[in-house]
Length: 82
Image (cartoon, rainbow, N blue to C red):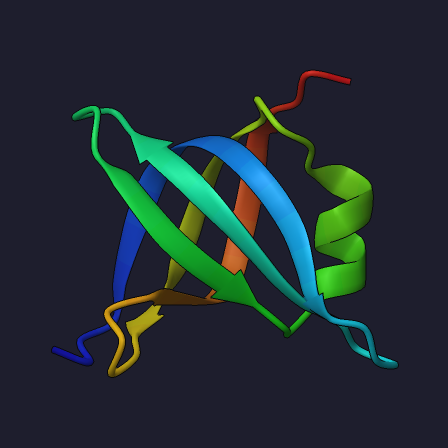
């Protein structure tokens, strides 16, 4: 269940969950298979908030936690709607 894996899709519903020096950000990604995955990012979250907005196409790498949320370790934006 905690295997390292990746997801590819479009970002939806970005929300700051915990506002700290390094914020915890929650977002939803709609994959190419029309599935929606709940994701969390803390590592590099400020850069994420700057580079990504709703509608951006990204690839994310990470693991799943006990709540089956995808915890992002790395990401790559390949199309931004800015």
